[in-house]
Image 1 (cartoon, rainbow over the protein chains, first blue to last red):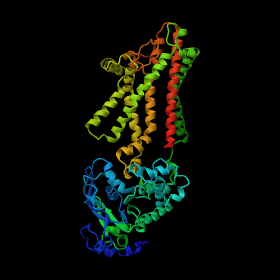
Image 2: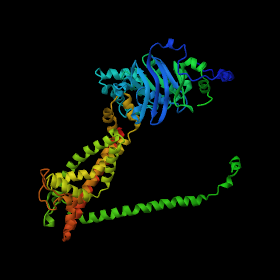
Image 3: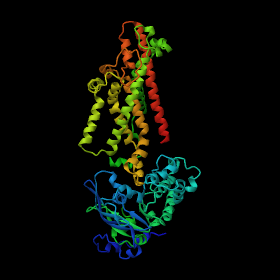
Image 4: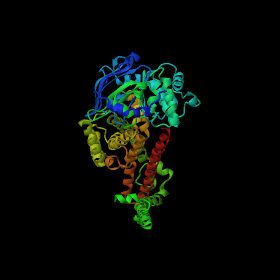
Length: 290
Length: 298
């Protein structure tokens, strides 16, 4: 676990402020590329507009394969919008326009030939509020698999998905009970099980613990560490301790007077929290704003 | 008054509202509310009691198994009851699929353009058109142009048009009540638009749609004017066996009896009203039952 040296950062405040402010760079710190040779998802100069309102401005990040990347930043910094840009969920709202591209295993998911429905199977998503279907646990898991043409044994898939989401032992006595009958934390793990049941390559998590109590949150965090062995995980979180606890890499986003939804800094979580290169990152992680 | 906030807690005398007066006002509005409810309930009770007193004596087996007759003691409601049921079956078969599909199209697929706006304005207008106008439309289009004659089918088509706006509006409301998180969950799993609508939106909206459809049916059963216009006969001594047969319905039969001179026919009319009310109550109960049952499932 990474310790966030809040007090140390405070002591260094004066020196940090003395540093000459450099122009914002979306380039990665020089030591990073060596640690993540092949990104699973690559966002290149990505901008997104809702009508005339620009929510994300020229973001470029390479999300490392089978690692957890946390996207942090204050409310309205565009982090959720960026996340929804990776599985094209933004388009469900009308009037969305994008620029730049998002490469999933090297293929641009915004290319004309790509169907967003196919993208969303490959890039799973877990939402802020647990949203199981008002159906049985079994049907919750099987829905995605069925529409995507799953041919093999259904019971096996249900068990594998529930085990994968660390929920099997709690619910296997009654898979016919409604997903809504579970506790909040269990519901969220059911949503994770449902997401992994369609064998995605990437899992997007949009503040998955913000509606949960601390114990359920810890369970989800443990589960995320476990899932990172098989999936590339990108998590948006308001909770900096959570980002520090679970993620391997962290991206910090911010909106300011000049542009909305900019990437300020991206790097290994340890570096970003102990030794941020941008003074705004430093100010945010030490709790001076946001 | 910035200084006052500093003395909060010590400045209790500032609050001088009389508790008694406030309580009195509360009671006053309870009484006012009850008084407003009363006319509706009293009128309904008076009507019910009057109808039951007049008609219950005439409600016997013979009343249900006989056709209309010149002789009150031999007259019955068979043709009208079957005519109503027959017409309603076709009405619902026509109106529910068209109405539900229109609602799905408007809510899920239609873009926000002038064409959609045009359809929406039209549906809103149709809901406000007097029923007699539907009758005239039915007479011209179904009875004459499409040569259905004064048949069950012509009546059903006219009624279907009449209740279509109600079904569309109710279905749209039901679809709109589906939580966005449900759609998101479905889309995020790689479901297509149709799969999302078919597996999540429709099942969730079904109770609301059914309720709307049944309430629309109740409306259609009570309608008289459009059917008189298209010529649903007032004297039908046979059961319609074919969609193109002539027919009559409960409200027209009742209207017919009320307008006769002999007082016995007025009793028959009251008996007919009881039958009509029972049919309506059954329909509404089914609507409530279905809604409750499906709500608990979802």
